[in-house]
Length: 164
Image 1 (cartoon, rainbow, N blue to C red):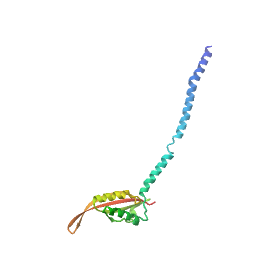
Image 2 (cartoon, rainbow, N blue to C red):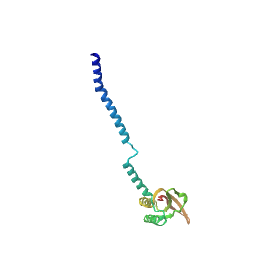
Image 3 (spheres, rainbow, N blue to C red):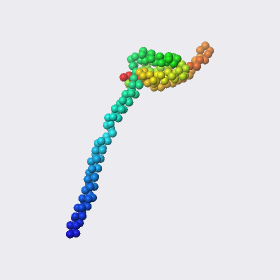
Image 4 (spheres, one colour):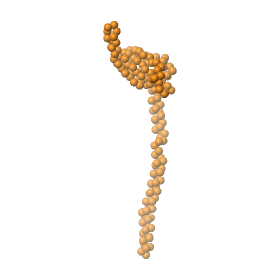
């Protein structure tokens, strides 16, 4: 009777302790596999669509009509400069050193009052369709003319333009 009681207690303990633990362990393994499959971070269509839209908005800033740059865009840049009393002194040349894959750089030089140059720079930056400003340097030089020293402010601006 002692052996039968022992076997009965062993069966009861197995049913009450080990069976629920075994089932919980199997459920844990099953849910862990589902979690790994569902949490694949490399594929997030919403994130990828937002990223593509943002990149398209950034690329639009760099786009300009490179074929008509000499006529239309330079005319628009000259108008912006003239509104501020600034003079466009150097027109860009087609220098192969200023071209990289998919982009071209254009160097523009302006002459005028410092504050007018800064306003012109601000207007150029806000104007769409002429490219994006890459770098700017404003220098003050003294020009000697007929024995007089005439101070000049010169702003050199590099525009980056997408060829596509």
